[in-house]
Image 1 (cartoon, rainbow over the protein chains, first blue to last red):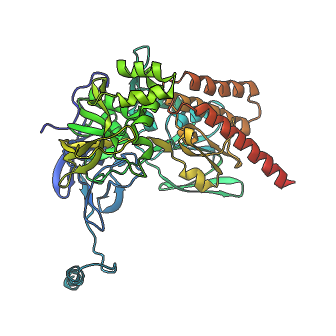
Image 2: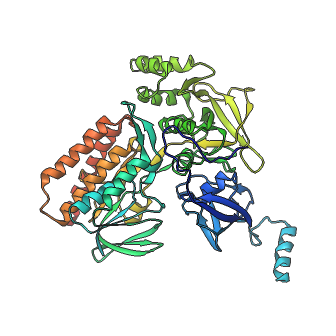
Image 3: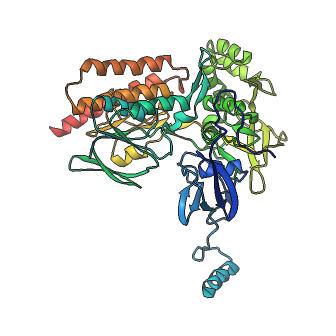
Length: 124
Length: 408
């Protein structure tokens, strides 16, 4: 599939000489351009899943793209809960997707999940 | 300490800042996004004179004017609380707290959610999200997809996406459920579209507009006779008698389920089929983004023609709270040009509050300008906007009378 970056447009003036920015997402190398948000740079690279739902583990991407819904929250240079849609891409940025979290105190978890959680704690 | 703090650097906020700056008020504008312009940035449509309204350029014009004045613009700044302490507004943000005599909330609008099974899959986004991706960041939301929700916003953005080289397979109705009700009944959707026949180059819609103004029986008949495969507007198929019932995919949106529906939105049995796509846009319409006015303690009124709950304010854009003003889509869903006119008015009213030398005549001109801009607006998001505005005036006056009585 071709890139989602728009290269020609009948009305909008596109700047093809924008500075290339390098960043990583889940330790994989990507590039974006100056003026990108984290969300637009990832979308241009065909990356749609920005995080796993903390409880269900279901994949989530950008929804509102204006900072209102918080569906696109990612971890940027160690800072959690950063909205990918409002954050300008910077050279060398380290972006990590949010992952499913353990839920040992919620009713209805499987015995295996319970054991795994405490075993993970013991090994640390 | 600043004379005037403005939350939101969109068309209303920037215009207000310019009016304040021109009248010598020390003004600070804050906005969450990395560029000034708000949702104006994404707009791109053709005016009746065939000239394109390019939101990015319009935003830049406002910004360039603002920077010549004593205005501080703080971007990537998010407000999380507002308090009134010893006669001043205190606005708390991720970049620290600000103190001001006058506060204008110009936070615009947000999109109504329209849950369709499967809508949390990556690749499903609001129509406004796709607009910002395409027109601001120049990235397509996908290669080929569908839009759920037939309304003026989805039609306009569908055309913008098509210009960007995105294939729109069709604009469909959502499956009828309690959360999609106002967008899921073909008869109602058709009626609301008839307000925009002047915008859409489609013979069917134009004929519909002509007949439908005459009788509601003809309107109902028109929906029943509606061509099964839909009609096209700007080459984009409008599927008014088909609904998206589900979005399917493994870790991302890959297919949608489409069913035929009756004119009341009932699913026709055994008509379901699948359509391959790589993105889905959900277009539920806009509502005023008013949480901050609520936090500040402003009273509200529910006015459907303005898009929902709006902060009560008078003709000078002033709320019943001392020093608190509102402008733009937070006061009701209208076009960017109306937001600009409202922003200018609010800026002049705030300047008058601070400096009595401003002539009453200029304020009256600004009030008049909001009215004429509204009358001339290309897109009326709701046919009863003026009625809604009048209703709000009545609410503001009655609240004022009530308050003065309690004061005695």
